[in-house]
Amino acid sequence: MTVLNSSVADAASFLRNDELVAIPTETVYGLAGNALNAAVVLKIFEAKERPSFDPLIVHIPSKEAAFLYAEDVPPVALKLMEAFWPGPLTLVLKKKSIIPDVVTSGLDTVGLRMPNHAMTLELLNHLDFPLAAPSANPFGYISPTTAQHVMDQLDSKIAMVLDGGACKVGVESTIVGFEEGETVIYRLGGLTPEDIRKVAGEVEIRINSSSDPKAPGMLKSHYAPSKPLYISNDLDQLIELNNGSRLAVICFGDVMIDEKHAIYNLSATGDFTEAASNLFAYLRAIDKRDDIDAIVAAYLPESSLGFAINDRLSRAAVK
Ligand code: TXA
Ligand code: MG
Image (spheres, protein in one colour):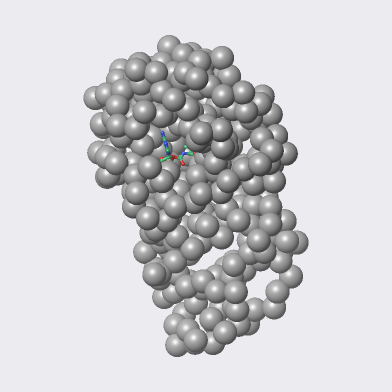
């Protein structure tokens, strides 16, 4: 049986005993274990059924802690830490040997992040090791944004879920790395490309959609519900094409949709932050319904968090 409560002390004690605990962050829930213990890290891969070529993010309690696990930190990385930590930013830095190779899938870099969640920061401050944590979902499925989402799938597979409420941001961290003097965004997330540019200056966006392990977590199919999801810029046409099915419609802003469909408006007022925080919870809620056959969704406008949301929707969609 998996323990579900809000006790940081309980979570710390399970983690010290080399058990796995799902932890709340501002982005999504993570499936955490001692990042310095290779055997524990292997248990994370097993619980998630995650392929070993997909490296994990290491969660740390402070900016200073970054220097325990990374070296040759470029000045621009420091500026980004100052501006956005704690927050939805993962920095890919040259790793020190204290980080086991299983964490990074053999890469010589490590993804570090200081999450912005009071409970999890308190937890990290209690521990004398950092936490490796991928999103706490079975590999390929929708990321969890509540403790109950984690319980729905990992109950009895892990020791504990630390309940820290619903995640405020709702999409994963933005991942940024540094290559030969260039700042590169590898994954769009809770910080927008504009946010990063304001601090880092010129930024390359290199989102890969192959199964290249160096391309961070960017498998083509991911975040996928079990019902088919179709996506387009022309929502009316998409609804028309799928007229024979019982549809859930994911939309955004001030739109008119026939009420015979199940309508899930990410934000009726067109607020990107609200939309991001609703996205994964809506997908999970729809996926549970017996009275829905398929999901249709409209791309959001390409600005602000719209980039990250569109990225998640297109990976969740039928290819
Ligand atoms: O918001 C988040 O980042 C959440 C919360 C729990 O912190 N975590 C998360 O983890 O989204 P995960 O494992 O679902 O996605 C992390 C991605 C992986 O797909 C991996 O490819 C990439 O980060 N990554 C980790 N270390 C890397 C490295 N050294 N180089 C390149 N990519 C890396
Ligand atoms: Mg994930």
